[in-house]
Amino acid sequence: MMPAAATAGAERRAVTADRTVRRDAWAPLLLGALLGVMVAGRFETVLLGLALAACGAWALGAPRPARRWIAMLAASVALALVLNLYLVGGRPLPLPRLFGAPATLEGLRFGALLALRLIGAAIALHALAALWPGERAADELAGLLAPLSKIGVPVDEARVVVGLALRFVPLVGAEAARIARLQSLRAGRPPRGLGERLVRLRARVVPALTGALERAEQVALALEARHHRARPVARPRWPAWASWAGAAFGAVALLWRG
Image 1 (spheres, rainbow, N blue to C red):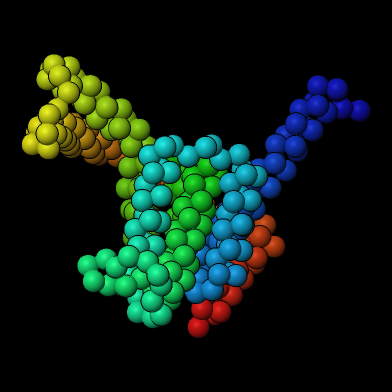
Image 2: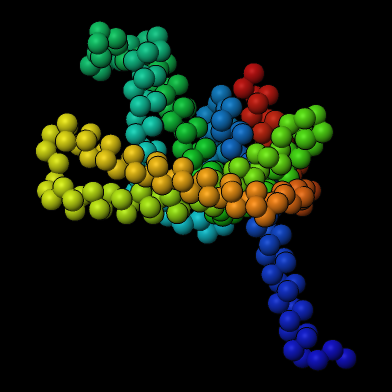
């Protein structure tokens, strides 16, 4: 008979493996939802994809988006609505004109559809970021695109570049924030007017960009000195039902658009 400790360890490993499989099953579903909302031409498809992405974000325990993320999404949605509302021809609505162009019912419909597509794609990407933290996203996508390397597509090189970029983004962001604080302290007072704001922005961007380039050069030299080679790409082991479901949703959205 197996000792109690060994039995408990085996049970914990089985539970962890089962939880990992359940989380990985969301990968093809979220990719299918992302593809579906990007090509959706009907409200039914985009709403279904948005619901699938939201369920994935909830099931994976995705953190609450930052305020900047929400503000950027809200600005994109508002711009999509306004541009479609006034640039798409159709039956006019009782709304103020913008540069002589009337708001139209068809523009409102297309704008609402595009806004939902943007929201669905943003939620799907947010859920995928929670499932694939850091450079794991580069590894997973490289494994998915591995067959393209047989026809000359540099999948391995792209994976290394994207993986390094994802790994160093937090460091570069922290360095840029530190430079911004130092420049604000050196100025001694808040900026006055647009001209001073642009000068302050240049004073932050130039040192941050210089530091990022120096760090990139150091990393390249270190990789060359260590004779770094890309590790083999592992094909993703997603459940078959999840892979088929994600592919089917993307295909249906693409075909239904036509």
